[in-house]
Image (cartoon, rainbow, N blue to C red; front, side, top):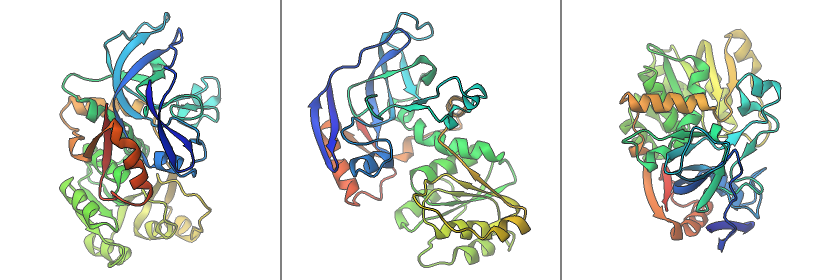
Length: 341
């Protein structure tokens, strides 16, 4: 099969790789659309802890099943599917509780020898697959993976109608979190981002207001917008150390700060702000199949559209060049770039 392989740090090559072999309890999927994630750029740069070159990475995708193993019952060749790209060990306490996203032995598509969607074919287990509803494009289906990152974080909070929120970082995950909050009935949502383009996207996606943290004081702006009340929830979607304490300062008493971004180094937090205001700090780690099912239910109910989050589509032969450009800091105005096979 054709694939883009990171053969070493900062070097991608188009290769002819061995087509994955379908096991008896697996399905073989022909990739139709694949999204580019920031973790893929980190892999290219040699900075990702698991997606280590040489590797065929990529994990945001949709496609068509072309082969099923002998023990597979719920899927058939020709099924259009979207794939949740990780699977737990099935034996630990977290897997048994259904929170396999926390499993210490979980496995990922696009890590190690499990070839990812930067190749024409991908192996998956049936438990990772969901059929794409009629009317949903392969592009929107592939965008479900980043959407479900935000969906999972919002689900952890129990946010709903009458609540307010701030999203710090208006990139892909921040905007997907904004959509999920709206689907829960949260109408008052502010977005902070240094990019004017991202702030404009946020407004177009329904943000109540935006903050430019370069020219505006986050605390002053949010307090002015909320009548000095603050917000019920703050979602941190960018790993910039100062935003943790800023987020605590604008969260209401009894409010929650949810950390979605992956911070590479320890960060100092003013614990007094947590204790005195009885605020909570939560971590949000990826998603589970429940989040995909919730997202698909919202789509079928007419509440979810992801088309506007897909801001650039490229061909497979453009992928290596676009990865290189992203690693150089270009194309930062894009929300989601997808490869159409």
